[in-house]
Length: 96
Image (cartoon, rainbow, N blue to C red):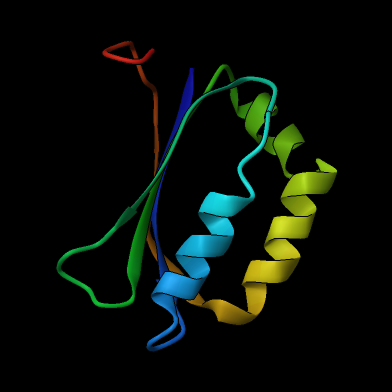
């Protein structure tokens, strides 16, 4: 399995709007076992995204899906940046 955990930073004051886009556009993504979006309580504009995929290839392929491309296009103006990106090798657990 392939995991990715990272923090997205919204444009100042626009986190809730960005969260609405990210949560409202989730659709079927082949190979995706878990996709969790959370507010960062320590950073007023921070959003944590935790993903688990069957493989790195499944994750890469998801970026070409029309629904994912549409979400990226809609969200891009509200994203100030990314930080704390970590790749992981999930082994199992609740929900997996």
